[in-house]
Amino acid sequence: MTDTPVRAPRVTPERPAGGRSGPPRWRKVAPHLPLGIGVVVSLFPFYWMIVMATNTTEAIYRFPPKLTTGSELATNVREVLNRVDFFGSMLNTVVVACSAVVLVLLVDSLAAFTFAKYRFPGRNFLFTVLIGMYLLPTQLAVLPQFVLVSEIGWAGSLKALLLPPLANAFGIFWMRQYISRAVPDELLDAARIDGCGFLRQYWHVGLPTIRPGLAFLGIYVFINAWNDYFWPLVVLVNPEHLTLQVALAQLNTAYGTNFSMVMTGAVMAVLPLVVVFVLLARNFVADATKGAVRG
Amino acid sequence: MVADRPTGPAAVTPSRGRGRGVPGRPAGVSTRRPTRAAGDRRRRPVRSYWREYLAISPFYVVFVGFSLAPVLFTLYLAFQRWDGIGEMQFVGLDQFRFLVKDSTFWLSVWNTVVIWVLATFPMLAIALVLAAALNSRTRSVGFYRMTFFVPNITSIVAAAIFFFAVFSSQYGIVNATLHALGLPEVGWMQNAWTIRIVIALLMTWQWTGYNVIIYLAGLQAIPTELYEAARIDGANAVQIFFRITLPLLRPIILFTVIVSTVTGLQSFTEPQVLFGSTAATNPNSGGPGQAGLTMMLYFYQQAFTYNDYGYGAAIVWVLCLLILGFVILNWRIVGGNRDD
Image (tube, rainbow over all chains, first blue to last red):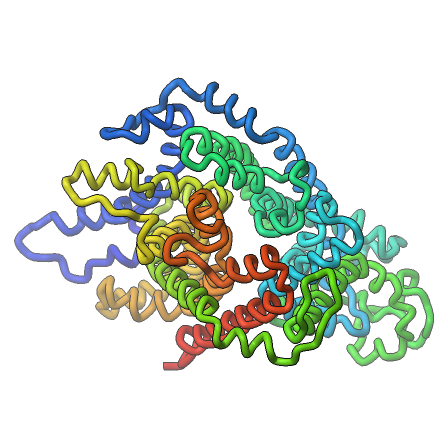
């Protein structure tokens, strides 16, 4: 159906006389124009990054510039690998991001499950404190966080990068809402009558039911951990031990005018995440819809 | 939404009333009958809830130690002089007195607000247009949503590197295009205002798609009967947009404005990466004319480059108050007079 009432902008109360068929057709095409521009603007940087990464800097930075992909990718990649420990820092990033996902999912889902499905003294107070902190800018805490991490000897270590995601209140806040809707109380009651204690209610009833929610939160945590820049910049005092974003920024600082080479590093740092996201997130959207229908 | 009903879980959850009149009885074993008034829980001693407290404790240990305590400690630091190593020295309001007279600080406030304004308003307007256009489609909505969202998951570091390359004065693609069109080239990275515009463009590119997704969800939640009724009453598209869509979207718009305020006023990575490569200037200075020196960048410079922790704490608290002020202001403007 092409005439659903949702499309308010296309409503034409009075047809212009004289048989002009212009406005309706224009209206039909109208939404495509901004959407098309939006797609081009969203994706052009990726195209242009790849063009730059596959050419020499000289080929791009002259007039007229080369507008299509070239054959210099291998050279550029080799240059990047010579200058920074790219795969080392990527491995660090992957390790940190995956550990953050596992820890956050466990810790947050357990706490959120408790908040959503159980009553206990101080529950509302504790949750209010959490929301209040969530509304404050995260940077407010960063100085003492750095002091603390230095005190316990974690400065420069990857362990320190797990603390901000674990202390982030968003996961609990979001998960609590999700669990309230997704886990029926009757299910928990049935489990309890069958003799399930608290932990088994969480593990055998709660967790399987909220899998789509876990997928969403997991993707969220992973992306944030992958892209985080400020905290790793502050805390990774040991230049041997970097994450991808910090290594990329250093590459840029040191060799900024070698645009093709730096852009190759950027492509290598961005594309894995984007590709994985596009593949995984599509599944995730389907899962989320399914979960909603099933619930 | 569930959070809107604070008593929700207790009211609808039969199992919560367990243990009435059985003080000290372990929660999980009780099979008392369902419906209990909320007041009943007083009869259970606090320690009988140890499971619940244990379940939330892993989060709260990290949260209190790494989030709550540091925020309070930042407040304490703002009244001290400390380089992070030596003795802390109480200086009262000296940090704030200095801050008020520090012209570089005020420049950073000005830069932050200007960049935020330059980014937020185009971003939200474009997002609204795109969401409305997307809402009129039934096919390939998923494709558009995904495409628009990809900039948001791109690392700011990579995006900043890209923008620097594209706006480079020497034959960057933007100047090359201007040249090809016979227009004068612009020294994007040399001029204070163009620096701010480039940073704002970068933020717009990253966040428009995010807002499209939010607006689209809001648009889809508007009942179609309202549009039908308006159409029957003879309203045209413009009237429908301004009299129905926009008022009903107001809470969503408020949400996006607040998110943009909180993220936009904390901008750091964009200027830090953009001007990290110009060796001629101080990497933390924010570029020529310090036009890209945002409050967060100034904070970073004071705290972590010069180890002036007390002053850094003062800056970041002022930033926090500024964000709070803007959020309240937006709340008033966008969320206010709801019943007109």
